Length: 121
Picture 1 (tube, rainbow, N blue to C red):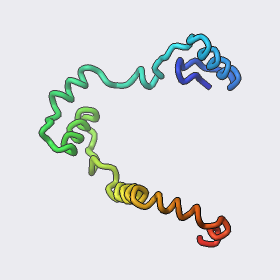
Picture 2 (picture 1 turned 90 degrees about the vertical axis):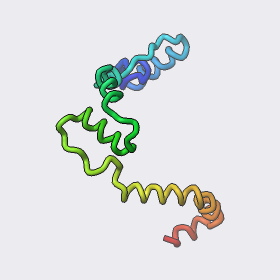
Picture 3 (picture 1 turned 45 degrees about the vertical axis):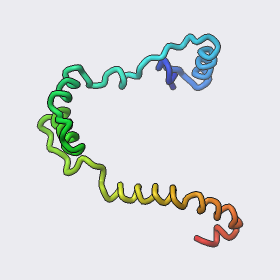
Picture 4 (picture 1 turned 90 degrees about the horizontal axis):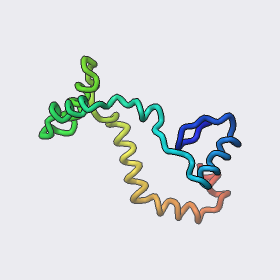
């Protein structure tokens, strides 16, 4: 167990809770990046490489492939820069359904007694 703020490790949840309570009372816990945040592979050289080698006049997909070539030199390009289009379409359909009909579905489900709901499916 560790403190999400200072990343200090604790033997059990009680010690962690005590640490958090102390921080709330005294502000003694200092925010520190996690090891993942501190060791990200971004360097100024890589940022400069993006700016110099990615043409902003390209389509978004073409820009994505340009970035891929910089970050993963020599690695074969994926077939698409997009998440599986078939899956995306399903997610977008669900999102559209929730936004357009979700409220009425919830309202109707509140009107149907629990016993009827279990017999429906």
